[in-house]
Length: 154
Image (cartoon, rainbow, N blue to C red):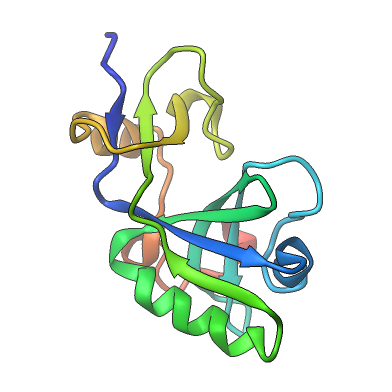
């Protein structure tokens, strides 16, 4: 079954820009952001429980966090706590959207290639079929589905 490229309306982007944003995130999140991107990562509580999960994309020297739309303001507030006096801007980016398609010439979802292709581009038509497809493959995302899970269990 071939589907047209579509926008994931339940996802949003947070842009981190400024001096050494990769270095800032490197010590905060669960995955290596110094290497190739995109990667799936999370911000954890001190006890190791998942607070936020997101996919990190490079956009020049900036980083884009592909996260659940409902969590954007909470994620920005949490990251701002760790920013301290670093010259880093953390803000929502509504000029771009997360896109998904079952196949095509785009990069595979970094969590599981069978999820299909995922990329960042201006908003398009709303997605259809994404949620059902992701759940059939048993891939969870977001605070509601990850709940009180330790990241190690993901």
